[in-house]
Length: 230
Image 1 (cartoon, rainbow, N blue to C red):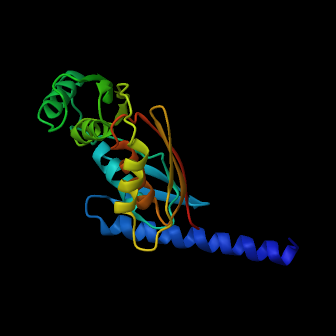
Image 2 (tube, rainbow, N blue to C red):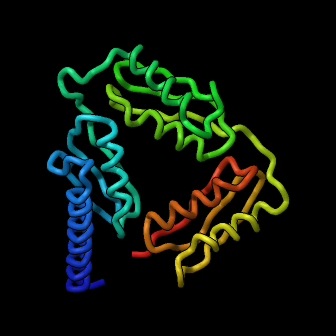
C-alpha cells in the first residue's frame, strides 16, 4: 500500500467512525429513557466505547441497548459510571431485599435459585439456572432497581446432556430467524458447546443467532465466531 492508498484508507476509516458515531448519537437522543448529553461515544473499527456519568444503572443499561441497535456496531465497551443523585441512594440491606422481591416475582425463574449480595450499592448475583434466558431474566429483574450502581451477573448454567438432534435443531432455529438473503451460519456441537461461524450484517442479527443457540436443550456454552460485515 503506497502513501496515497494509505491516506485514502485512513480517510475512509475516519469517515466510518464519524458516521457510526453520528448514528449512535442520533439513536441516543431519540430514546427518551436516556440523557444523551451525559454520555460520550468513541468508535474505532466498529467497537463503540461509551463514557460519561449517569444517575442510575438502568440509564446505563438503556444506553448500552441503544448502542447495540445501531448498524455498524461490532461490539460495545461501556465505561459509563453511575453516580446516584443525592437522596436517591438506598441502604444495601434495602436494595438486597428489593432485589429478592423482584426476583421472586420474575416469571420463569425458579424460586430461590438466585442469590443476591449488595456491597456499597454494587450488586452481584450467583446461583445455578437451567436456561440462558433465566440469566437474562434475573439481570432484567434487578437492573432497574433504585439505589443500584452496578450489577455483576455470576449465574451459571447447570450441566445438561445434549440430545442427538441438537445441531440440526439449532440450524433450523437459525434458518427461521434469518433475514431474507442472509448467508447461512455454520453450527458445530461438541459435548455441550455450540460453535457458530459465519457473517451477519449487524449486531442484533448476531445476538439473534446467539440466542437461538442458547435456546437449545443441553447447550451450556456458545462459542461465537460470527463476524459482522463492514
